[in-house]
Length: 513
Image 1 (tube, rainbow, N blue to C red):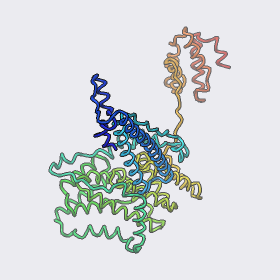
Image 2 (cartoon, helix red, strand yellow):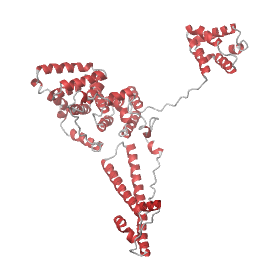
Image 3 (cartoon, helix red, strand yellow):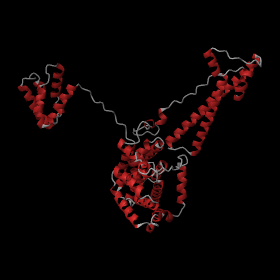
Image 4 (cartoon, helix red, strand yellow):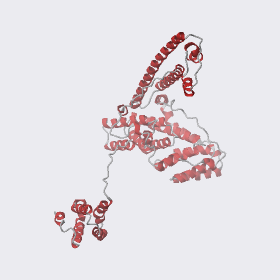
């Protein structure tokens, strides 16, 4: 029908496109009309086309309302569950594509018939939908986009700004990694992955990390002894890299002098085997991997695989020992998440696994993860809703379970670190500058014995003839409770000094009272 209107509409229905009509009116030029059919028959065809356009507009509004209802339901699911299923995402994309196609057709049909396009009603954002999960104050979903993911500029530079490796190795090419799309890495897929691994033998799962580390040492005897000495010296100095400049220099040194496949495997082993008592090294080691990642992505991949297997090993072990090793693994994963070396979805999945059996060491691991990268998750738009659901789940389990007071304190500290409550804004009373000066010398300088003679001199120099200054000085001297109790004698000495100069004798009785 649209093709008919474009090519034959002028002959059969006397149609004049809207753009052509506007141009003819603008330049005052008459458009020649076709006389193939008489006007009566053109009017009949035109009325049929307009009736069809009216039904098309009704269908467009109906599709728009259905799409809005579907989006509202998706938002509710996000607020209650934290993530949409793959089927709902695909259905939403299909509805959006179908509606866009229908809307474009309606625009073209309205242009051909010289009709107005119906206005699509905008959905009113209801505050209630966004506050379904709001407990104990904190940030709303609309406030996340206005906040920075990082606490300050120094932290942002640490996690986002890296040395330009092209300055040192101009011939190297940046390797573009094929990242797994977020849509395919859903919570359901991760659940299936975990179930498949649970079907394997426990012994094989327990030895996964050990076998992976031993694999890195197979070719240890094949390397040159001099290169091995240099690499060992480099690796022994890594624990001393405790600031950004040192770790950046170490990354450049490895890239220029130690960049071989075996050395990269050796580096992964050393990074993975960081002592459990040196948690302060984890951010710097993660930064080292992030600097090398554009040119050597296999380091980040191998390290992530090792940490993932080690995390699942500790989860399946379910023992109450080696808490420091468990905290080291979960914090290392959290640091890699902040450097975008470990998937956010998989990072949140680690938190979900810990919440599934929220007892003993799992509580400490979950709180450590929230304190390390919880704020990063909460303030990232793509993971905010899911993080919010997990936070509320943690608070409900804290209330429903009988936990030790130490665990309760850890949970509350982690929760309010990620989602701090809104503090009321305290308004500072604005006073004239002279009033502030009087309060400063009486209530602050007077508390220091060495400043007492200066306070007397300043009080004598006030313009006592000014009625406002006179009244405020009397008021401050009368309110002796604003002065610390040990300094009451200093205030009395100040008053005695002022009386010697025959000032305020009339008001002495009021001050004493």
